[in-house]
Image (cartoon, rainbow, N blue to C red; front, side, top):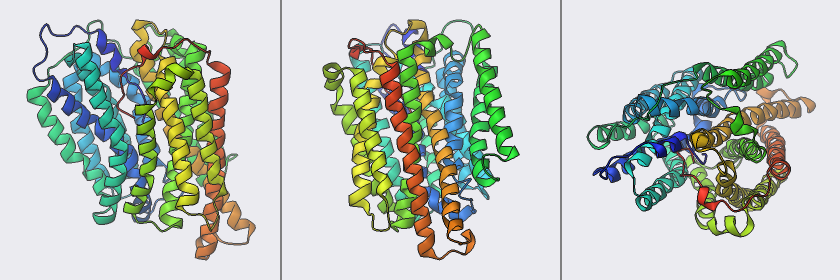
Length: 502
């Protein structure tokens, strides 16, 4: 779920002298291929409670079903876009599709949590290849500006609707076929897309020397993994002061610092520091990360509240999430005139504030809470709020960027949200587990022998703590936007193409 992608450097690649006769088929194949990337974010939210029960995941480790995918996708997206540009976008799309299918099959066959988490990481790795390759192919296939605009509109509709489809499909599959089919469903989609790629999609590559910043990719991904694993160990291994937790967090700091040093010295950096040193752009990237963390964390605990506390079936839970997807789609589709009328900074700050209010609304949860009084108002407020941010964010993040850096800037915007999607659930789940344990301990209860009513009250206490922190993350995003983003002139014409993750 993000806004832009590495494909923009493909816009400068020389196109064919005549229009690609199969360009509309290219659009369909690329849209369907990247639809899986979106589906696999929302579909697992509904499947997670059943998968946790089936595989015996601990509460502390369950967030890896989400974060393993987001970490691999976000950590490797920049590198994946560069590989697709130089190796060949059609070739990399095929590799990504087949690899995604294989990883999905592995996830469906998982015998234990570790096997499932590894499969999810592999899915994210291949998603980081296929998503930028697919969008690049669309950019190259459509050389006429009007046709390209229509193509990106269709592509955006696929991605926008993907979240809603994933929620419904996840509910139906989980309830009637089992959570494993939320993995298996990707296999036929990927194979059909791969078969259609062979005859209909034209190969394309970017000109220039091939340089891959593999050290940068390894350092940033390793640092993020250590950070998330440190959060998980804090919940599962003795708290924040435990030696293993401190060692992992220290390793994260060292690896991420080394990443900055490598990027500063590299002749061909994965993320040129000049892209993020612009004050306004840095403000949007930081806000995007914080919003991604709060939003994905909210979805994790809302899933459990609906299915565990309110006893919703997976199908009912999927339907209950629909207003959230519809709100984002409606806001990003209908709100474009507001960018010019109010300006992107005002719109982003207002939207983030609205989303913050929505998340703090959930701190009212108690045993009498229901869908209409707490969940629905939150979904409306947060979806409209983040929709306004997603609408205006690219205007600032991509405004004034050097054409040579357009691709990496748009990729960094997408990556920042994926990193938030990985860090948010990990951090909030750690705080949730600690809150539930403290709640039960303070009442003299043993977590394994607690009456059902007391357990549900403890869960509610944990949810409230998680939602307070998630709301604080969004409030921090508002502060970052107000403090860092300068008020620019309208840059609506600079808005980038839709991306594969949103």
